[in-house]
Length: 431
Image (cartoon, rainbow, N blue to C red):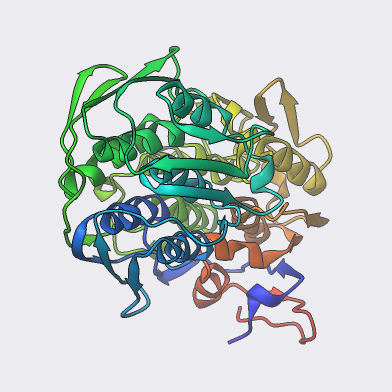
Protein backbone atom coordinates (compact mmCIF):
# COMPACT_ATOMS: atom_id res chain seq x y z
CA UNK A 1 0.00 0.00 0.00
CA UNK A 2 1.42 3.44 -0.89
CA UNK A 3 2.73 5.62 1.92
CA UNK A 4 0.32 8.51 1.56
CA UNK A 5 1.65 10.15 4.71
CA UNK A 6 5.03 10.64 3.04
CA UNK A 7 3.63 12.37 -0.04
CA UNK A 8 4.09 16.10 -0.51
CA UNK A 9 0.67 16.41 -2.13
CA UNK A 10 -2.30 14.29 -3.11
CA UNK A 11 -4.81 15.03 -5.83
CA UNK A 12 -8.08 13.31 -4.95
CA UNK A 13 -9.75 11.55 -7.90
CA UNK A 14 -13.40 12.30 -8.38
CA UNK A 15 -15.41 9.14 -7.81
CA UNK A 16 -17.79 7.85 -10.46
CA UNK A 17 -19.93 5.72 -8.18
CA UNK A 18 -21.37 5.99 -4.66
CA UNK A 19 -18.88 5.13 -1.96
CA UNK A 20 -19.96 1.99 -0.17
CA UNK A 21 -18.47 -0.50 2.26
CA UNK A 22 -17.15 -0.76 5.78
CA UNK A 23 -14.66 1.72 7.16
CA UNK A 24 -12.77 1.68 10.43
CA UNK A 25 -12.87 4.89 12.45
CA UNK A 26 -10.03 5.35 14.96
CA UNK A 27 -10.63 5.73 18.67
CA UNK A 28 -11.53 9.13 20.06
CA UNK A 29 -8.57 11.45 20.47
CA UNK A 30 -10.46 13.51 23.03
CA UNK A 31 -11.19 10.51 25.23
CA UNK A 32 -7.80 8.81 24.75
CA UNK A 33 -5.90 11.92 25.81
CA UNK A 34 -8.13 12.27 28.88
CA UNK A 35 -7.96 8.71 30.16
CA UNK A 36 -4.22 8.26 29.55
CA UNK A 37 -3.09 10.85 32.15
CA UNK A 38 -5.83 9.85 34.59
CA UNK A 39 -4.72 6.21 34.41
CA UNK A 40 -1.13 7.41 34.82
CA UNK A 41 -2.03 9.19 38.06
CA UNK A 42 -3.70 6.12 39.54
CA UNK A 43 -1.73 3.85 41.85
CA UNK A 44 -1.89 0.60 39.91
CA UNK A 45 -2.40 -0.80 36.43
CA UNK A 46 -5.12 0.28 33.99
CA UNK A 47 -5.84 -1.10 30.53
CA UNK A 48 -7.22 1.22 27.85
CA UNK A 49 -8.71 -0.43 24.78
CA UNK A 50 -10.08 1.02 21.55
CA UNK A 51 -7.60 3.88 21.95
CA UNK A 52 -6.30 6.16 19.24
CA UNK A 53 -2.67 5.76 18.22
CA UNK A 54 -1.72 9.00 16.47
CA UNK A 55 0.74 11.87 16.80
CA UNK A 56 -1.30 13.56 19.54
CA UNK A 57 -1.69 10.48 21.72
CA UNK A 58 1.92 9.43 21.11
CA UNK A 59 3.06 12.80 22.45
CA UNK A 60 0.92 12.26 25.55
CA UNK A 61 2.25 8.74 26.12
CA UNK A 62 5.85 9.88 25.64
CA UNK A 63 5.38 12.71 28.13
CA UNK A 64 3.90 10.34 30.72
CA UNK A 65 6.86 8.00 30.34
CA UNK A 66 9.20 10.95 30.88
CA UNK A 67 7.44 11.53 34.22
CA UNK A 68 8.00 8.02 35.51
CA UNK A 69 4.86 6.25 34.30
CA UNK A 70 5.06 2.85 32.64
CA UNK A 71 3.05 2.99 29.41
CA UNK A 72 3.00 -0.20 27.37
CA UNK A 73 1.30 -0.75 24.02
CA UNK A 74 0.14 -4.37 23.72
CA UNK A 75 -1.44 -3.80 20.31
CA UNK A 76 -2.43 -1.08 17.84
CA UNK A 77 -5.44 0.10 19.87
CA UNK A 78 -4.47 -0.56 23.49
CA UNK A 79 -2.39 0.96 26.27
CA UNK A 80 -1.42 -0.68 29.55
CA UNK A 81 -0.62 2.05 32.05
CA UNK A 82 1.08 1.45 35.40
CA UNK A 83 1.21 4.48 37.65
CA UNK A 84 2.21 5.11 41.24
CA UNK A 85 -0.22 7.90 42.05
CA UNK A 86 1.97 10.83 41.06
CA UNK A 87 4.27 12.22 38.38
CA UNK A 88 8.02 12.63 38.72
CA UNK A 89 9.77 15.74 37.47
CA UNK A 90 11.04 15.07 33.93
CA UNK A 91 14.72 15.50 33.19
CA UNK A 92 14.05 17.72 30.17
CA UNK A 93 11.19 19.75 28.67
CA UNK A 94 8.14 17.81 27.53
CA UNK A 95 7.71 18.22 23.78
CA UNK A 96 4.06 17.84 22.78
CA UNK A 97 4.07 18.81 19.11
CA UNK A 98 0.82 20.57 18.26
CA UNK A 99 -1.30 18.51 20.67
CA UNK A 100 -3.56 21.03 22.38
CA UNK A 101 -5.20 18.53 24.70
CA UNK A 102 -1.87 17.14 25.93
CA UNK A 103 -0.40 20.62 26.38
CA UNK A 104 -3.34 22.09 28.32
CA UNK A 105 -4.01 19.01 30.44
CA UNK A 106 -0.38 18.42 31.42
CA UNK A 107 0.11 22.09 32.27
CA UNK A 108 -2.50 21.75 35.01
CA UNK A 109 -1.47 18.23 36.06
CA UNK A 110 2.18 19.30 36.35
CA UNK A 111 1.21 21.35 39.41
CA UNK A 112 1.25 18.10 41.41
CA UNK A 113 4.90 17.42 40.54
CA UNK A 114 7.52 18.12 43.20
CA UNK A 115 9.86 19.97 40.87
CA UNK A 116 9.97 21.88 37.62
CA UNK A 117 8.16 20.89 34.45
CA UNK A 118 8.60 22.71 31.15
CA UNK A 119 5.86 22.05 28.61
CA UNK A 120 6.63 22.95 25.01
CA UNK A 121 5.44 22.23 21.49
CA UNK A 122 6.15 22.89 17.85
CA UNK A 123 5.95 26.23 16.06
CA UNK A 124 2.19 25.92 15.71
CA UNK A 125 1.63 25.11 19.39
CA UNK A 126 3.81 28.07 20.32
CA UNK A 127 1.16 30.29 18.76
CA UNK A 128 -1.80 28.75 20.56
CA UNK A 129 -2.91 30.63 23.69
CA UNK A 130 -2.55 29.17 27.15
CA UNK A 131 -2.50 32.40 29.18
CA UNK A 132 -5.99 32.01 30.72
CA UNK A 133 -5.05 28.63 32.17
CA UNK A 134 -1.75 29.92 33.52
CA UNK A 135 -3.53 32.93 35.07
CA UNK A 136 -6.05 30.63 36.74
CA UNK A 137 -3.28 28.49 38.23
CA UNK A 138 -1.42 31.55 39.44
CA UNK A 139 -4.58 32.77 41.18
CA UNK A 140 -4.38 29.88 43.66
CA UNK A 141 -0.63 30.21 44.22
CA UNK A 142 0.87 27.96 41.55
CA UNK A 143 4.27 29.10 40.28
CA UNK A 144 3.53 28.91 36.54
CA UNK A 145 4.77 31.17 33.78
CA UNK A 146 4.26 31.50 30.02
CA UNK A 147 5.94 34.77 29.00
CA UNK A 148 4.35 34.89 25.53
CA UNK A 149 0.91 33.75 26.64
CA UNK A 150 1.55 30.58 24.64
CA UNK A 151 3.87 27.59 25.23
CA UNK A 152 6.47 27.04 26.46
CA UNK A 153 5.04 26.94 29.97
CA UNK A 154 7.12 26.45 33.09
CA UNK A 155 5.42 24.99 36.16
CA UNK A 156 7.32 24.78 39.44
CA UNK A 157 5.28 22.30 41.41
CA UNK A 158 5.35 21.62 45.13
CA UNK A 159 3.93 18.10 45.09
CA UNK A 160 0.24 19.00 45.29
CA UNK A 161 -2.19 21.33 43.60
CA UNK A 162 -3.22 24.10 46.00
CA UNK A 163 -6.88 23.86 46.87
CA UNK A 164 -9.45 26.60 46.93
CA UNK A 165 -11.66 28.40 44.46
CA UNK A 166 -10.55 28.89 40.86
CA UNK A 167 -12.38 31.18 38.44
CA UNK A 168 -11.76 31.00 34.70
CA UNK A 169 -13.35 32.21 31.50
CA UNK A 170 -14.35 29.10 29.57
CA UNK A 171 -15.20 30.99 26.38
CA UNK A 172 -11.86 30.64 24.60
CA UNK A 173 -11.33 26.94 25.17
CA UNK A 174 -13.09 24.24 27.16
CA UNK A 175 -9.68 22.55 27.44
CA UNK A 176 -8.67 25.05 30.12
CA UNK A 177 -11.67 24.05 32.20
CA UNK A 178 -11.08 20.35 31.61
CA UNK A 179 -7.43 20.74 32.61
CA UNK A 180 -8.37 22.32 35.95
CA UNK A 181 -11.04 19.70 36.62
CA UNK A 182 -8.59 16.87 35.93
CA UNK A 183 -5.99 18.36 38.26
CA UNK A 184 -8.43 19.13 41.08
CA UNK A 185 -8.55 15.64 42.69
CA UNK A 186 -4.77 15.92 43.24
CA UNK A 187 -5.20 18.71 45.79
CA UNK A 188 -5.15 18.02 49.52
CA UNK A 189 -8.43 19.90 50.05
CA UNK A 190 -11.57 20.40 47.94
CA UNK A 191 -11.33 22.58 44.84
CA UNK A 192 -14.13 24.68 43.41
CA UNK A 193 -14.01 25.68 39.75
CA UNK A 194 -16.26 28.51 38.68
CA UNK A 195 -16.70 29.74 35.12
CA UNK A 196 -17.01 33.43 34.37
CA UNK A 197 -18.85 34.85 31.40
CA UNK A 198 -21.84 33.46 29.56
CA UNK A 199 -20.05 31.42 26.92
CA UNK A 200 -18.46 28.00 27.33
CA UNK A 201 -16.53 26.76 24.31
CA UNK A 202 -17.60 23.20 23.44
CA UNK A 203 -19.40 22.42 26.70
CA UNK A 204 -19.81 18.80 25.66
CA UNK A 205 -16.09 18.24 26.07
CA UNK A 206 -16.33 19.24 29.73
CA UNK A 207 -18.93 16.50 30.11
CA UNK A 208 -16.45 14.07 28.51
CA UNK A 209 -13.87 15.13 31.07
CA UNK A 210 -16.22 14.62 34.01
CA UNK A 211 -17.18 11.18 32.70
CA UNK A 212 -13.52 10.17 32.35
CA UNK A 213 -12.75 11.42 35.85
CA UNK A 214 -15.65 9.43 37.29
CA UNK A 215 -14.44 6.30 35.50
CA UNK A 216 -11.14 6.61 37.37
CA UNK A 217 -12.72 7.25 40.76
CA UNK A 218 -12.80 11.04 41.08
CA UNK A 219 -15.67 12.60 43.00
CA UNK A 220 -17.19 15.76 41.58
CA UNK A 221 -20.37 17.69 42.30
CA UNK A 222 -22.00 20.30 40.11
CA UNK A 223 -23.04 23.12 42.42
CA UNK A 224 -24.62 25.19 39.65
CA UNK A 225 -24.27 25.69 35.92
CA UNK A 226 -20.57 26.34 35.38
CA UNK A 227 -19.66 25.64 39.02
CA UNK A 228 -18.12 22.37 40.24
CA UNK A 229 -16.73 21.11 43.54
CA UNK A 230 -14.07 18.41 43.28
CA UNK A 231 -13.08 16.33 46.29
CA UNK A 232 -9.46 15.37 47.04
CA UNK A 233 -8.44 11.74 46.73
CA UNK A 234 -6.73 11.34 43.39
CA UNK A 235 -7.55 8.54 40.96
CA UNK A 236 -7.81 4.76 41.11
CA UNK A 237 -6.89 2.31 38.35
CA UNK A 238 -9.60 1.14 35.96
CA UNK A 239 -10.02 -0.57 32.63
CA UNK A 240 -11.58 1.69 30.02
CA UNK A 241 -12.81 1.24 26.45
CA UNK A 242 -12.56 4.28 24.17
CA UNK A 243 -15.40 4.87 21.72
CA UNK A 244 -14.67 5.73 18.07
CA UNK A 245 -13.80 9.32 17.22
CA UNK A 246 -16.91 11.30 16.30
CA UNK A 247 -14.91 14.05 14.60
CA UNK A 248 -13.31 11.45 12.32
CA UNK A 249 -16.71 9.91 11.66
CA UNK A 250 -17.99 13.20 10.22
CA UNK A 251 -15.73 12.84 7.16
CA UNK A 252 -17.22 9.46 6.33
CA UNK A 253 -20.79 10.60 7.01
CA UNK A 254 -20.19 13.51 4.62
CA UNK A 255 -18.51 11.31 2.00
CA UNK A 256 -21.49 8.99 2.12
CA UNK A 257 -23.92 11.88 1.67
CA UNK A 258 -21.93 13.61 -1.08
CA UNK A 259 -21.65 10.47 -3.20
CA UNK A 260 -25.01 8.90 -2.40
CA UNK A 261 -23.30 5.87 -0.90
CA UNK A 262 -23.58 3.71 2.20
CA UNK A 263 -20.57 3.58 4.52
CA UNK A 264 -20.77 1.40 7.63
CA UNK A 265 -18.47 2.66 10.38
CA UNK A 266 -19.77 0.15 12.91
CA UNK A 267 -21.23 2.71 15.32
CA UNK A 268 -24.62 4.39 15.08
CA UNK A 269 -24.57 8.21 15.25
CA UNK A 270 -26.68 8.26 18.41
CA UNK A 271 -24.27 5.91 20.18
CA UNK A 272 -21.54 8.56 20.43
CA UNK A 273 -21.10 10.62 23.59
CA UNK A 274 -18.82 13.17 21.90
CA UNK A 275 -20.37 16.52 20.96
CA UNK A 276 -19.20 16.45 17.33
CA UNK A 277 -21.65 13.60 16.69
CA UNK A 278 -24.37 16.26 16.62
CA UNK A 279 -23.06 17.13 13.16
CA UNK A 280 -24.66 13.99 11.78
CA UNK A 281 -28.12 15.55 11.91
CA UNK A 282 -26.89 18.50 9.83
CA UNK A 283 -25.08 16.27 7.36
CA UNK A 284 -28.25 14.23 6.95
CA UNK A 285 -30.07 17.37 5.75
CA UNK A 286 -27.68 17.91 2.82
CA UNK A 287 -28.27 19.36 0.22
CA UNK A 288 -30.78 21.34 2.24
CA UNK A 289 -28.61 22.35 5.18
CA UNK A 290 -29.96 25.25 7.27
CA UNK A 291 -29.13 28.85 6.43
CA UNK A 292 -27.26 29.26 9.72
CA UNK A 293 -25.23 26.72 11.68
CA UNK A 294 -23.93 27.38 15.19
CA UNK A 295 -20.62 25.55 15.44
CA UNK A 296 -19.80 26.49 19.04
CA UNK A 297 -20.59 23.07 20.50
CA UNK A 298 -19.16 20.94 17.67
CA UNK A 299 -16.08 22.90 16.69
CA UNK A 300 -14.02 20.10 15.16
CA UNK A 301 -16.92 19.18 12.87
CA UNK A 302 -17.11 22.68 11.38
CA UNK A 303 -14.49 22.05 8.64
CA UNK A 304 -16.47 19.01 7.47
CA UNK A 305 -19.74 20.95 7.46
CA UNK A 306 -18.13 23.91 5.72
CA UNK A 307 -16.85 21.91 2.76
CA UNK A 308 -20.15 20.07 2.52
CA UNK A 309 -21.95 23.43 2.50
CA UNK A 310 -20.09 24.40 -0.68
CA UNK A 311 -22.30 21.87 -2.52
CA UNK A 312 -25.51 22.76 -0.66
CA UNK A 313 -28.51 24.15 -2.55
CA UNK A 314 -28.41 27.42 -0.58
CA UNK A 315 -25.76 29.49 1.26
CA UNK A 316 -24.82 28.66 4.85
CA UNK A 317 -23.53 31.03 7.52
CA UNK A 318 -21.40 29.51 10.27
CA UNK A 319 -21.60 31.34 13.61
CA UNK A 320 -20.21 30.69 17.08
CA UNK A 321 -16.86 29.68 15.59
CA UNK A 322 -14.57 32.32 17.12
CA UNK A 323 -12.48 29.55 18.70
CA UNK A 324 -11.59 28.16 15.29
CA UNK A 325 -9.07 30.98 14.93
CA UNK A 326 -6.94 29.52 17.76
CA UNK A 327 -6.96 25.86 16.76
CA UNK A 328 -4.06 24.11 14.99
CA UNK A 329 -4.26 27.01 12.57
CA UNK A 330 -6.73 29.83 11.97
CA UNK A 331 -9.28 27.39 10.64
CA UNK A 332 -11.78 30.04 9.62
CA UNK A 333 -9.21 31.72 7.38
CA UNK A 334 -7.91 28.38 6.11
CA UNK A 335 -11.40 27.21 5.19
CA UNK A 336 -12.18 30.46 3.41
CA UNK A 337 -8.91 30.34 1.49
CA UNK A 338 -9.39 26.72 0.44
CA UNK A 339 -12.96 27.23 -0.73
CA UNK A 340 -11.95 30.33 -2.68
CA UNK A 341 -9.22 28.35 -4.40
CA UNK A 342 -11.89 25.95 -5.60
CA UNK A 343 -13.94 28.91 -6.82
CA UNK A 344 -13.23 32.61 -6.15
CA UNK A 345 -15.95 34.10 -3.98
CA UNK A 346 -17.17 30.74 -2.69
CA UNK A 347 -16.59 31.82 0.92
CA UNK A 348 -16.53 35.09 2.81
CA UNK A 349 -15.25 35.91 6.28
CA UNK A 350 -17.57 38.35 8.02
CA UNK A 351 -16.01 39.12 11.37
CA UNK A 352 -15.67 35.71 13.00
CA UNK A 353 -18.53 34.26 10.94
CA UNK A 354 -17.89 32.29 7.77
CA UNK A 355 -20.40 32.45 4.93
CA UNK A 356 -20.29 29.67 2.35
CA UNK A 357 -21.96 30.74 -0.89
CA UNK A 358 -23.22 27.36 -2.02
CA UNK A 359 -22.43 26.33 -5.59
CA UNK A 360 -23.91 22.90 -6.39
CA UNK A 361 -22.69 23.23 -10.00
CA UNK A 362 -19.18 22.50 -8.69
CA UNK A 363 -20.21 18.85 -8.60
CA UNK A 364 -18.53 17.34 -11.65
CA UNK A 365 -16.67 20.56 -12.49
CA UNK A 366 -12.93 20.72 -13.15
CA UNK A 367 -10.81 23.14 -11.13
CA UNK A 368 -7.16 23.63 -10.27
CA UNK A 369 -7.17 24.01 -6.51
CA UNK A 370 -4.06 23.38 -4.41
CA UNK A 371 -5.35 23.41 -0.84
CA UNK A 372 -2.89 24.59 1.79
CA UNK A 373 -3.61 22.42 4.82
CA UNK A 374 -1.53 24.68 7.09
CA UNK A 375 -0.32 21.43 8.69
CA UNK A 376 -3.84 21.06 10.08
CA UNK A 377 -5.28 17.57 9.90
CA UNK A 378 -8.90 18.76 9.81
CA UNK A 379 -8.29 21.12 6.87
CA UNK A 380 -6.66 18.30 4.89
CA UNK A 381 -9.35 15.72 5.66
CA UNK A 382 -12.30 18.02 5.06
CA UNK A 383 -11.07 19.31 1.68
CA UNK A 384 -10.52 15.74 0.51
CA UNK A 385 -14.32 15.58 0.48
CA UNK A 386 -14.43 18.25 -2.22
CA UNK A 387 -12.16 16.11 -4.37
CA UNK A 388 -14.70 13.28 -4.32
CA UNK A 389 -17.08 15.28 -6.53
CA UNK A 390 -14.92 18.00 -8.12
CA UNK A 391 -11.94 17.33 -10.44
CA UNK A 392 -8.60 18.91 -9.58
CA UNK A 393 -8.57 19.26 -5.78
CA UNK A 394 -5.05 18.74 -4.44
CA UNK A 395 -4.18 18.50 -0.74
CA UNK A 396 -0.78 19.86 0.27
CA UNK A 397 1.00 18.13 3.18
CA UNK A 398 -1.43 15.19 3.35
CA UNK A 399 0.73 13.58 6.03
CA UNK A 400 -0.63 16.00 8.62
CA UNK A 401 -3.63 13.68 9.07
CA UNK A 402 -1.33 11.55 11.26
CA UNK A 403 -2.23 13.91 14.10
CA UNK A 404 -5.54 12.10 14.67
CA UNK A 405 -6.35 9.75 11.75
CA UNK A 406 -3.16 8.22 10.32
CA UNK A 407 -5.09 5.74 8.17
CA UNK A 408 -7.41 8.35 6.62
CA UNK A 409 -6.11 8.09 3.05
CA UNK A 410 -5.97 4.30 3.26
CA UNK A 411 -9.58 4.22 4.49
CA UNK A 412 -10.71 6.33 1.52
CA UNK A 413 -8.70 4.16 -0.84
CA UNK A 414 -10.40 1.10 0.62
CA UNK A 415 -13.75 2.65 -0.28
CA UNK A 416 -12.66 3.14 -3.89
CA UNK A 417 -11.03 6.58 -3.92
CA UNK A 418 -7.91 7.14 -6.02
CA UNK A 419 -5.08 9.62 -5.60
CA UNK A 420 -2.22 11.09 -7.65
CA UNK A 421 0.57 11.94 -7.81
CA UNK A 422 2.54 10.53 -4.94
CA UNK A 423 6.05 11.93 -4.58
CA UNK A 424 8.37 9.62 -6.45
CA UNK A 425 5.55 7.28 -7.56
CA UNK A 426 3.25 6.99 -10.53
CA UNK A 427 -0.35 8.10 -10.35
CA UNK A 428 -2.49 5.64 -8.46
CA UNK A 429 -6.17 5.00 -8.96
CA UNK A 430 -8.44 2.38 -7.49
CA UNK A 431 -11.66 3.67 -9.04
